[in-house]
Image (cartoon, rainbow, N blue to C red; front, top):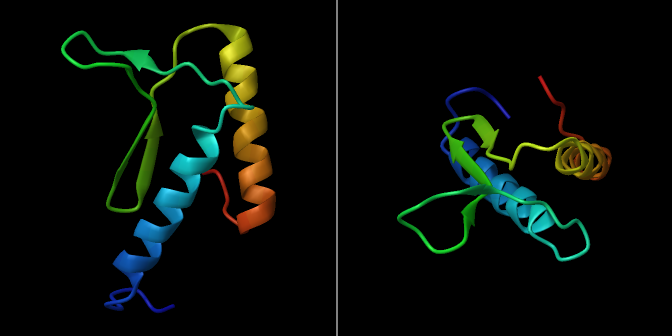
Length: 81
């Protein structure tokens, strides 16, 4: 798809939703950053063409996130930059 295409933003939204659903599945068990003024936790956020993960800081959680991202990238063709 060419840069500037009107469909590019919709493609990103579909991709971001699929990534969020993959990361929040029960079998991955990721622990997001706890936000004081909000119920639950913050796990991911997307803006323009960037995605950020907000994880609870421990090595086991980071390892689960790396594995989940690797599986998602293999299935979607996405790349981690």
